[in-house]
Amino acid sequence: MRGIADLEVSGSAVLLRADLNVPLDPIGHITDDGRIRASMPTITDLAGRGGRLLICAHLGRPTGDDYASRAAGGPSLRPVAARLGELLGQPVRLAEDVAGTSARQLAGLLADGEVGLLENVRFEPAETSKADAERAGLAGRLAALSDLYVGDGFGALHRKHASVYDLPALLPHAAGKLVQAEIAVLHQLTEKPKRPYVVVLGGAKPSDKLAVIANLLNKADRLIIGGGMSYTFLAARGYEVGRSLLEADQIGNVKGIMADAERRGVEIVLPVDLVGATGFAADAEHDVYPADAFPADRESLDIGPASRDLFARKLAGAKTVFWNGPVGVFEFPAFAAGTKAVAEAISRVQGLTVVGGGDSAAAVRQLGFPDTAFSHISTGGGASLEYLEGKPLPGLAALEDGR
Ligand code: 3PG
Ligand code: MG
View 1 (cartoon, rainbow, N blue to C red):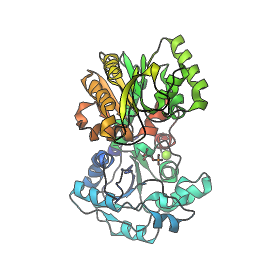
View 2 (view 1 turned 45 degrees about the vertical axis):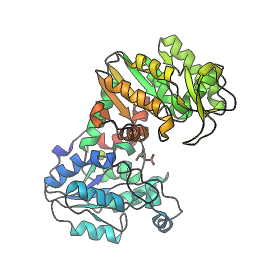
View 3 (view 1 turned 135 degrees about the horizontal axis):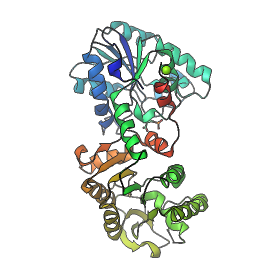
View 4 (view 1 turned 30 degrees about the horizontal axis):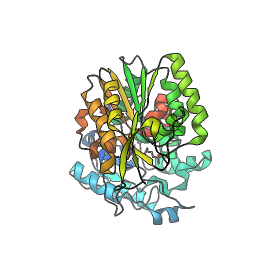
């Protein structure tokens, strides 16, 4: 795979596909700019070498049947353009469309070393279309804006979208620094990881993660499962989980995974106590219950203190750790202790420690951990998991094709 050092960018128009999909609060302020900061090394390199840089990115999942209704509903990349400009120390102009008149105007205006941003590429229904011809149409209009393509939107590489998958085939292209760094870390997690290799999985649904778990049974020595998905595992062991999140239709699959893990000698660690609340609210009344004696009328929102100790013991001594998904509702301070304890235990590990995914990355920052507490905080949740599942990533395949 070519890197940006292999591209002659000076005086050329460069279209950079980045993942600037940051969380916004209800009034449109960026609550975690991690993905923008992670994109800066590539942006400053390309602009510093005299490229005329046009950045293409998505934000959220706009809805609507056509361009006009999506653009009206938003979200616009305007706050992202502002933040980019602050980090770059030079203004970043935002086109009013994705690949129309305004985009063409902006492309024509940029001087060497200047940076512009196209509007939210998902305003174009063709971006995410399943129809190859529709995506090809948009890719063609984007290609007409540029001489070169750089793919650095790691978090979107698992999407077969026009700007990620179809566009690189139309222009000389290379992978950006973020994509190269992320792939290098994922490579370390899959090719001869140092042992013991411990994986911590949290987040809402086992159905999202069963495929990755099945593949991790070939790689990891131990799987620690907490958070929303753990209740289906506890139910599969025959425990009462009350009103906690449960995917009842996955119990059979989870039992199969647990049996497979046992055959392969992979230890699955589940919570031994839970914080049971009267409802899903920041101020809900709550108590700690043993996992095998959970009340039918409570909902678990976090792991309990004995589980915090158990998870920490099971992480101590690891040489490789991958963590995806909070183990409690960390957004509510009363239910953040479990996720905080996991982050602390991982930060003490002497070895490769990787935090994967938007939610987990936001969790560790919100809980006050510096980025340096871990070897690597990935910008891609779904992309990392699909890579670890062993699935080809369409956006990566497009960059690797050697053109
Ligand atoms: C993400 O937030 O995981 C990436 O930006 C991809 O976004 P998507 O899940 O909406 O495709
Ligand atoms: Mg190619």
